[in-house]
Length: 177
Ligand code: 3AM
Image (cartoon, rainbow, N blue to C red):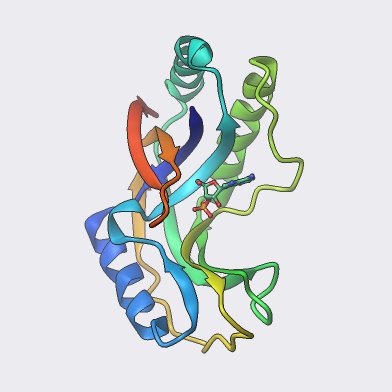
C-alpha cells in the first residue's frame, strides 16, 4: 500500500487555501489539489507491505502520544523546484515550525527502523495547491491571510493513484495530546 502521514486542515484554513486556488486558477496547471485532500504531509512512506501496518501504527501512536499539540499558520506561496519555474505550487507553513520539525525528527528514525526508506531531502512543510504546469508559469504575488490553526493529531493516509488524481483514504489517527 502507498502510504503517507499528514496533518489535516481546519475548515477556515481550507477556505483560505481554496480562495487562493481560485485566484491562481487561470494558471495552466493540469492538477489542482481538491479541497477535501488539502493537507500538510509529514512523511511520504511510499509502497509499504500491508504486514508492516500494525507495527507502523504502533510506532506512530507511541511517537505522537504526549508530544503535545502545536500551532501552525499559513505562510507565503512557494514552488518546487522554485517559484520562478514551479512544477508544484504550494503554501508554506509558519507558526511553531520548531515543534513540527521536532516531530518530524522524532518519527523519521523510527520509520527507518521499520525498513521504510525516506527522502534524504530536508523537510519543507507545505500545502500543495497545484501540480504539472503545461508551460512556463508566472505566479502572481498573492496576499495570504495569516490564519493559524491547532494541530492535535497526525493521520496515516493511503494514497491510491487514479487517472483523475490520487484518492486519499485516512487509515488511522494518532492524537498528539
Ligand atoms: O501533497 P504533498 O506535496 O504534500 O507529493 C506527494 C504528496 O505530497 C508526496 O507525498 C504526498 C502524498 O502523495 N509524494 C508522492 N510521491 C513521492 C515521492 N516519490 C512523494 N514524496 C516524496 N517522494
